[in-house]
Length: 133
Image (cartoon, rainbow, N blue to C red; front, side, top):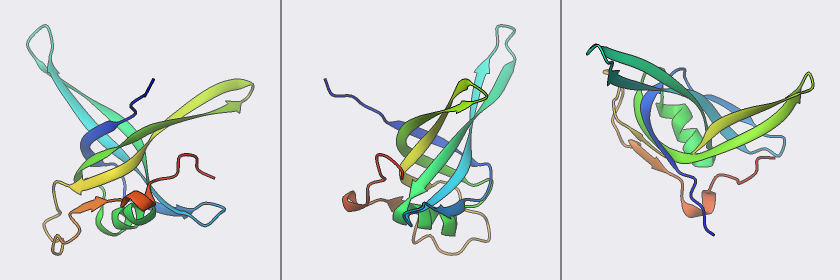
């Protein structure tokens, strides 16, 4: 049976993207994304909570994110969820992150230059790796 692993988020960067290289030389940019949720409580007051997501952008998308994204910027992000597990002090822990596939800037800083890279899409031949090395 086919499955679907797709996530779409609109939120603000929690920090500027950081770039690192895998042992095999692949480039990946990482950053956090804050997504606000608002609802009315039973007493009628508006309540708010923030969900935080760890994001990885590989290849050319990662390079674009590194170049144009900054803390506090509003973006649309589409990708898939990836959960890893590890052992720490005899306990199994899980860590879930978003592997970005598409990104679109929704709000530019006032002093940002022209928007020629407003939307970054990974070409099919540069899909993020299914398993990072």
